[in-house]
Length: 483
Ligand code: SF4
Image (cartoon, rainbow, N blue to C red; front, side, top):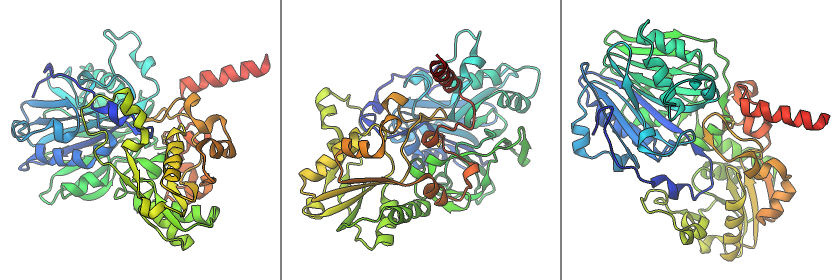
């Protein structure tokens, strides 16, 4: 338990999770304004529901109107909070956060909520999901340099003394470029705002007793018994206090929601734009079956994100569905440092084949994406070792060819197998009998947004928000072509 300057030893709970090579989301956020409710415990449960979005650290800041107390530690939500920690967080107003680091190191100092003095004599706590692309520009000249883009945001807001906190948030939000779904509280109000592109989700819910909550995914609303009201709109700030919820548009909306949230990041029970992720993933599987019909005996998912798509593939193709891979749910949920021998176990730490399902069978194996290719290669080899007669890999997204700068830690371009190999080369590398990726049109067709309302940059290289690193790279390519 600590106020702004509390100290707690860090750990490396994310290291083992990093053994798996899949993409990593940056964070989950939650905010609540609910007089008369145990807001600390509700936030704790909400963070449980958002745990998949960040597993390195967790924190909750609670205010009773006069004082804000923050508890944050490295580790999973269940490791960070015990009954006595929650009992000490007393108030009616809270923000919570679970983190995976892509900007700044994985350390206690960078755990959120960020907590600092505001220039107005109050204290503010801030939780951020996303990633800014103009951090260097905004941080120029600041001493000491903020450790993360989220700390930078809190500092820029907190240093304003000439306007109200709400106006300070609006002024700073207008300067930010990139992905940001943010919750902020001082001792009086809960604020939530979302970048004009709405790259990351952020939704508003209402509690039965009249309180308000804001969360990264609807699963967090469900777990606290809140009813989904609507999204925080791209370019919108909402403020909640004793007078209820107010909305303020601070920028024109130019929505480009992250397509990869649908493929992999969000929980299957999350609902976005009126559609559940589960049903969208089923449609991805159905379209994949139509685009790549296969002579096979059984369809198996790579758990967990491939599960609903595999069910869709099986239903559309008439090929039976079976669980041919069992996931160890506890990998990444330990404090043990990965040793070289643990690393060599690779995917076997995470997945085990069910021999009765795969032996002698022609398999359709449905997965969400291929990043570097090493996991798929190990997976195919493992299925063959378990007796699979054929392995046909079906992927519910197009090849990932470009890095994400908006809060998803995939890999650098040099590490992305889709950046410089074609599909046949990738098939040969992973050792599958056949490989098919869902087309971009097929994927877009499976989700509710139109193509021009989605970010597809990691599949197409078309970045909806200019990225300085990409501009520099393209300038270099142009220079080399000219030379
Ligand atoms: S680049 Fe890919 S992962 Fe990143 S926001 Fe765009 S669609 Fe999502």
